[in-house]
Length: 225
Image 1: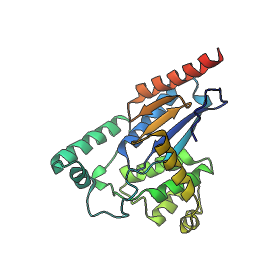
Image 2: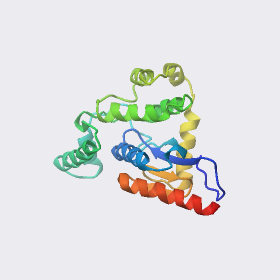
Image 3: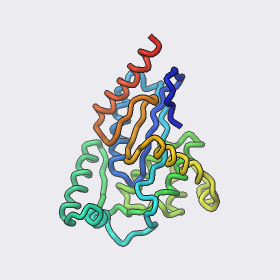
């Protein structure tokens, strides 16, 4: 839950809504962490990731490539869609990531978010999120597949995914995140709320992320001056 009250809190929370098939969320993830490396008060930051489904009705498997889906969604040519994805890949490369969007396998992300929620109970939320990002954007894996989710979770030290997915565990947690996003008025991701007071929308770059961190910290400091 995001802290919106005006009193001081002990922790400097950064609440981030994202989806694991959103390219700008992965870019923003890397940009934010690059900014955090330069933030003087990084040790006081507590990051909380929240679920957001770009398409809650997405099917588990699609007959279309990512380029074809983009072209259809925005009524553009396949060539233009491919060029747009190439530009995003180039941006990712500048941040040290190698993507292969031509191999990306569009799918439903609800269960992936449940696995992230499970990882949070082990203190491994960030590691799980990053692993899912990489699986989708770089490795062409279907991140709704139960066996794949179990394997990826095991890689970072989490077991019990099969049992979790067989029941309803963390369904409410994902729905709560999405309900909170709607209540706040978030319509797109990535969306970051820093210390309950500064909102960053989109992958604006590491310098903008750092500026937002410093702005939120300054506002917090002024309250106690």
